[in-house]
Image 1: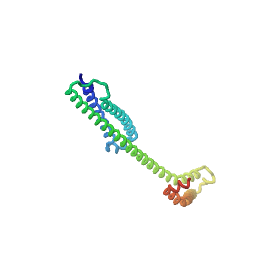
Image 2: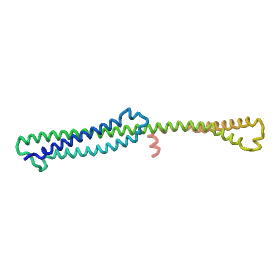
Image 3: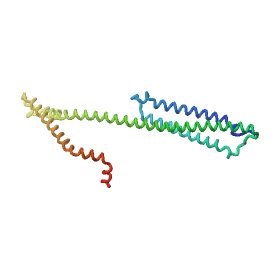
Image 4: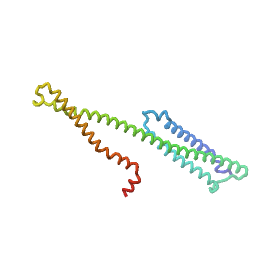
Length: 227
């Protein structure tokens, strides 16, 4: 009678070869997604790449579980009531073949587990890189808002005074040549008033800055005071 495990050895080897090709494909996809020349391109959406890595890792984890099940099945050979080889020579050949198959699946399991860990580390690194990019975009937008606010700081008083002197009022539009100088003095006064107000507000906030610095540098005292 022929050994059942030895009879299925070719099927196990074919399955192991398929798993090896699958792991090669997963490694290739990971290398392509984490290629520096690809990640440094501004058009690359790192968030989309992260979700792609997460999806591939989920598929890979299912294959890791499949390989673990196969290894457990091969290790439980003695406990299964399957037909075994009758002759000593056939039994020795079957045992050698089963050991080789078991070795192949253990290597595949180790490789798949390591590749899954590489996917997890790459996902974490890419997530941090995406957060840094978003922070940089937020800082760039904040700089744009500051520039726009600065422009508005100068143009709002000018626009306000211009709108007043642009009204069709007899008291203002009296045809006097001094109208331009009156508008200029009014706009300058409004701008000066705004500058003084801004300086007063910043001066009032200045005493709180050392206290805020101390508050940030002493988290232990802050927690004790909260208790």
